[in-house]
Figure 1 (cartoon, rainbow, N blue to C red):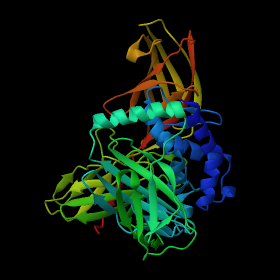
Figure 2 (tube, one colour):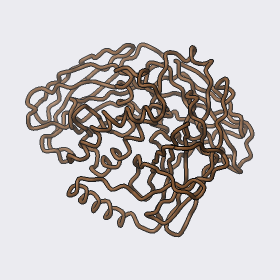
Figure 3 (cartoon, rainbow, N blue to C red):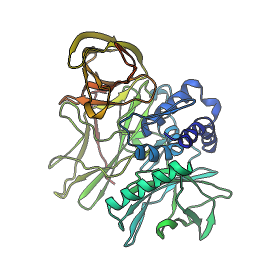
Figure 4 (tube, rainbow, N blue to C red):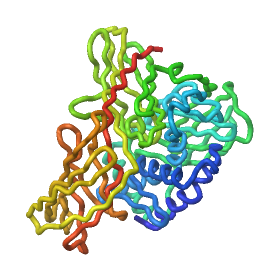
Length: 471
């Protein structure tokens, strides 16, 4: 990773995080060291980047251009992480609070968020399509995210452009920002570019505006993507406050994690968003970072008076944007049960292990037990492979099994790391459990490999059955 990108993310950690917390009126006095560490971990999970005081890390399997575009979006993700994933003490204590719903983003408890996007707006030309996906407005800031899809270029041509951009970045050590402006009622207003994700034919872009004067639902705003000679107008709507989650949509609570389902019908399709609130000790993976999960053959499904329906997801989502589940209901179904058979979470438990490195091709049985609060990780054996996937020093294949003590909580995976630039691949069984990691070895690795065991992932099997009220 080039020096400029390292410095960009180092500055993000120290300066931009505090700056954006202040922009969004989150009192820094609320945030202790553990809270800031949680925020960094959540940003890391969204981007695939590990942010440390003096370095930025990514796995060797992360492609250099993918890493660039992810890092480019990191500053926006800090803000969204705070808004979307702030953990309180207990949902039972917090349930009396006032809630509001930012459609397409989530349920928030910050009363300083005043407006949201009235409706998604799209403009399409022969060369591309632009869609305003979400807008959040506080008293002094506006955050806009929009999607742009190119129609005037092939994937092969785009790859050549991205390759040239990467070479230019290496030579000039400076990221190129797109030319995007924002207008209010036809008058230009200052906007700063926070980054984007995608980098392909479809990209997502994020803007932040400092508001020097008040805005209203009567104002017409314009995003002008000058690089592609396309613009789109949008308006705002005041957020509605709710006294309970049930006023927003069908809600169930398990393990201090609530899920609220909001459904809309449009002719032959049903669109469902699931908005979580997490007051548990875990980091919630489902509906924050991953939407298309399967465990022991079970997935989210819609059960109607006409039968069961499978979902589809949009081709582009993530980065704090809540993905919409779409169901075909052309059979004129009228009753809808949204069944969530499980959720995935991660904990902050950690351990450390020293593993032997056998000779190439040999398997060494271990059955080493690493105990977490309610489950055991069993490292059954290790094996060294040589020159697999092009790595000159091979991999240490680490095989797993699990032992769980609770019926509704199953350990299904961990992360192994030694806290530096590293590479690995993962293997899963038919149930969706991680059963092996192939960890890339280095020239200095001799007889033993010392690894940190982090982020144990659990499946919580308490079902969330949401009877949807269709708007």
